[in-house]
Length: 549
Image (cartoon, rainbow, N blue to C red; front, side, top):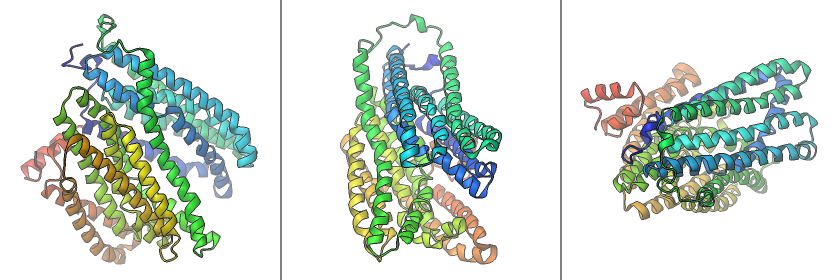
């Protein structure tokens, strides 16, 4: 295959990283919507009331162990595969890319099998000693096989990401979730007459059938893409870096994957520390035990879900950036690396800044509207700007990983976690601050991680202006925030709280869009990443002089 047309014979479209990010974002949003739907319907299928709550508890308990097994069974290998496949493709060496993929399949199948077996082995212990509820056993063993199939699925996703073809990844997310939800509804409906423990097991088994469906789809997509490469057999066996031995490739995969895996464990550990430290320090400062737990709930359950919403966008950008940056690095295209880096950070800011400002401005109304919990408003306000910092942290980490420095974001995030721990312990213990201190500590921790990441990027790419990346989003978001705050009171008087929240979000979105267009924050290339509707929208906005090239 000629180096000038890498991947061209594979019968798939090479996406720009922005287009790839958009495709992944759409797939993730559809998957999350389906996930939100089943959480409303499952309790009803299980009988509602106390019966539904008990069944959902049996459904949820195994996931606390499953999520850890999932992180350990994949170990960041899919991202490593995407990077190494992209590098091999940039050199025109598809033989090496296929070797990387085959080895990753063997590695992930082995890890998936080990951790599936481990879940089976520890099930009796957790059921008898930790949860002390034998009804949870069936849910645990129904969920365990999903680890193996998710691990295999992640290898295929890493392959397609490496080729910068994101449609198979996004489609597999939707296929996986659709089959999962249908399995849940079917099995719960069939098994609930036999007992809630069996109905909950049927619900957890949906994760396994969904993962199997995802693997089948990705295998079909992989075979379909290879059928277009008719001259594959003629490709030299020792092409490019094919001289690299199996052990060398495995070492390269693990050297990249292990720091990413450790980074992936830092965030769950930060949440674990919050769960242990925040209630304890609140009690020490004078809270009753129930009040301390409730205050922690304001942070974990009533604030963090909103702060994490922009992660749908930034995660998609990060996944798409790693192979794209690696591809440009291999071809020594420094200008392309800088362009992609700044584009990724700019898009993260376009989403993160208005999200943070919007959460801050509507911090009282949002938890009151959703849960009748106005007491959670100050907590949401304290943590709102994590929405921006988390997006910047994910995108800047992806660039560093694409540049072949996966350990740097790991160290930087670890430093931020230490700052967060120290400040959480200190500020939460101040009675006047309470749980808001934990929110501010989280902002400070992510702020440190982002600052260190940006300093690392400056060391590798040269100086760049953070102000230039943020000012357009900041101006548009500030005007948006002022408009929303001025209108939310009259809207609540006229339409009630629901009208105030929905109307405030709608007005804020409109103001932000108009201002960001006027200051040139959205470019033609940003819109062209949206399939079908992006190009016509760009043409219309250009005629109105609202869009720059």
